[in-house]
Image (cartoon, rainbow, N blue to C red; front, side, top):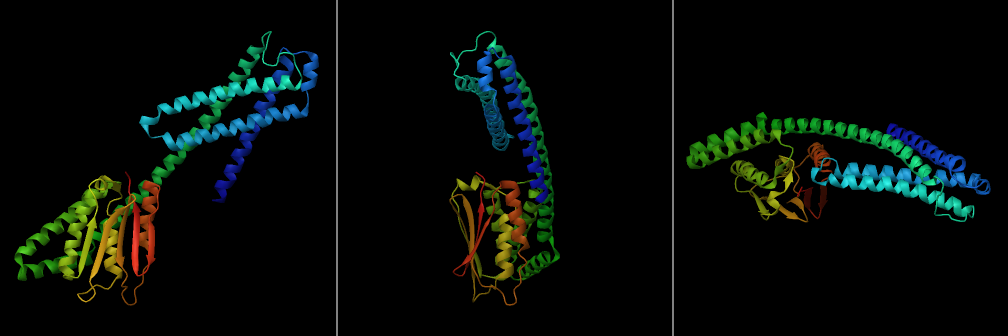
Length: 347
């Protein structure tokens, strides 16, 4: 963090020097080559006017850098919006031309020239020459900024890929770990003996769970509809194993089912409920899943197991995935005996 601050300060100092040089360059051209009288030249040959030029070029220069950063953030990667970049940069180019003209007019006004808005005897050539030099320098500055932004995007993409690979591997481990498989197979054996018809359904749902986990390993985002369909199968396995003491109410309209979220989000949250809460016939667990203001909400009553210890690693990893893939964090609330997790949906 400290290193980034130092680099940022060095960059700002460099840009300040560069824009100040442009201001001095324009001022020198005005004094030495603009078609103005000696009296006018003497009047504007002051530290105050020079400082005014430097300040004006720094203000416009840093404003241009902010516009460039905003463009990179808002439009890079959005092909259907890239045409707007052309118009924005054209506006910046002509803003520099207007600035040059305005500075020369102000300088002539300060010198009380007869015709401050006119530049006879080749004055416009000087104005255009200064403008072209500025455009070359500005182009180099923006190219440098663009390269820096591209490198940052590439580093972020590499970090995201690493996080995704870790999350996918962890999720697959959780689903295929021996404890989960052992419980499922024991339940299946019991169902074969006492309820063969239900054993067939249990086997199908177990197959659906494993199939979904494998399929979503190559997806950064999946639809909420796919997640809900998967969680029905996943919950069925637990319902059969635990008995009629766990239920889930899902209230999501068709419009929000097309929204996207990281795969296995619901599995982690449901597993979190089962792992940390005491669930029995005398203490049934009811989980609510619904959407409110483009946030998927999962809530359950808090009935923590005795000697329950939680590292919070699962929710932390989920939070990191949402920040990297959707640039929004999850919201965790625990109040009035209810534990709630709110996750953002991508429209």
